[in-house]
Image 1: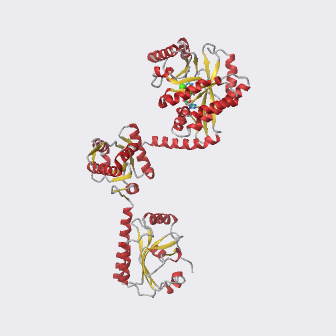
Image 2: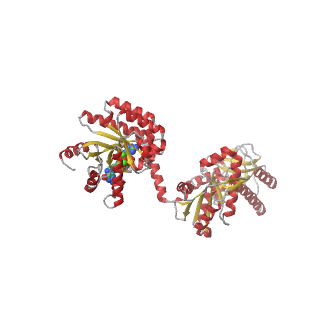
Image 3: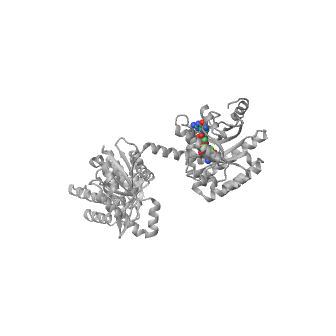
Length: 599
Ligand code: C2E
Ligand code: CA
Ligand code: CA
């Protein structure tokens, strides 16, 4: 005889779905359930059967959610009669197992409990997954069930399924609010889409997390919970019929809009925002909520429904960040997030090896001598799959993480190494390094700078440091002290992107800087726009008047060069002179440049 034909008969995918359902039904085997126990008792009584089981099929075994007349809690799955029951999908009866070739050598027949008679009603979910069975067992053969008995067994089986469903519903409820939870939201959206409907899902972020933490700290958990219930009630007032409310995280609700509600969404969402502008009264204390709505509209063809929660939550975050109240899911923003994530995760990896980075050098030309005495080091990243990535993209990203620190260190070490190499070749060329706010906050950075200068035996004046106003303003006193220390070492200190920030001149004067670099945005419109021309002239004159060496960046045309030279600018940098290039191209460039007269 062949063994039972499961699970080869059961499609592997169906089996996986079935198992997940067994898990998420919360049919935990250790907790007994009064309702299941009662059903089993009633069945034993009605059918006058020594053994009754509610049996659930696991991967390896069948275990009993409720049982009567048997002490063991499980058997091997291969011996389970209900393997057959869930496949037939109807009541399966075995009148005498010893006369049935499928069971005559079954362990449960030959050994205790010595099953001779079996009647099983399969437990099938609405979506067609067979979970196990309700079964009546005798140790003696029996005649077949009468039609009435079959109906009774089916009724009892239906009671078991009803109980299973209600347990399942419990697992979809957010306890404190009594609302459905995120799992249920995901499922409801999935179901509507399956029915061919369009669904609009909206995440409602009530408050920023820091604010919520403050409320908890000041007024306690009970108050916070009551506040959340008051918010829920306000939603009940403003949401139209048919829009179910969900609780998806401590600070967020969600709802879905279908049909008419979906078509009226723009007006409805505005009304909701307005409604939450009035403070919410909680135990006599008015609390201002700060609602941000994130919206995603889905049709049956959409594939993003699996990602639903992430997408609506990040749209709501976007609304909060931009202070616009409502933001629609933006696939472009989302792909930007995915790219940012990809870049940052590979950056972490690359920093360990360092071999995807290199420094490009862009010459600065002295307008008085026409010579190049210094270059700016610009970081380059050749990503193995994404290609060359601009520092304008990955540095701001890295600045939001701890990765900026090792990145800054890499640039520093590489610039010093290059300086030492040039020095040993007899080339005298200052290298300007860009530093970010994080580098300047960190006294270890200065220590490392000192150590490297000493180790490579280079002169500090062979290095320059470029920092932006915004990097200083963000961190104040500490950063200024670090700058002082670096300045005392003897590096050329330059304020980068000068004039693009707040440009509090009085404040800038206190910074230890001898040079200002004027941003390329000043230059780009100088030829076409009279005001831009006047502005650049004014800034150069003012900077000169304050005693700064002025460097204008982004010079692309002879006209621009002529103008800034007339106005007294000291040095220029830009594509007209040279683009950033690698160290060996720079050497060739210098040879030609020194021999020609570009000025
Ligand atoms: P930045 O310091 O203002 O650097 C000047 C930028 O202008 C460079 O862009 C350079 O390639 C570009 N540029 C130079 N001349 C011209 C020109 O004539 N026309 C135009 N259109 N552009 C010109 P890049 O290399 O993409 O760097 C962008 C920014 O990334 C830099 O702006 C700097 O803020 C940052 N950065 C680059 N390397 C580093 C680094 O090692 N550390 C830090 N913290 N930041 C860096
Ligand atoms: Ca710079
Ligand atoms: Ca700049």
